[in-house]
Image (cartoon, rainbow, N blue to C red; front, side):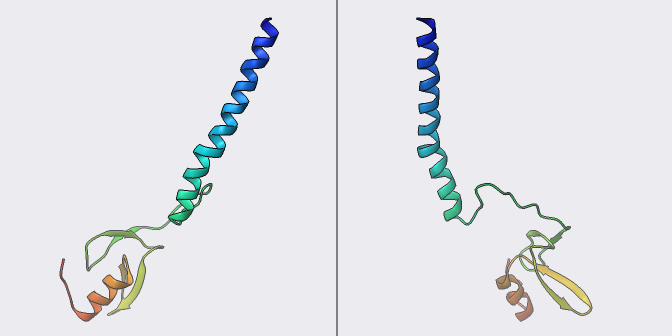
Amino acid sequence: MLFRILILLLLLLVVRALIARLFGAGRKASRKRARGGSSSVRATVRGRMVKDPQCGIYVATDLAVRTRRKNMDLYFCSEECRDKFLRGGRDR
């Protein structure tokens, strides 16, 4: 009798794990992929953080849009901020 109960519990755990994998993790992974994220690998950003001179947000140098002006490297969070800065717009 005890053996049958153990087998039944083991079977229930396997079925529960299969259902969770099919309905739970599958939706989370597909949402991540839809947003452009990876479901298993997380990228590590290396480099120092610099302040965007246009909007003031801090961005990692290896992810930033870089431009050179007056022998200085300038880093921007986006091409839009870079273009505004180069046009002379300083609206914050």
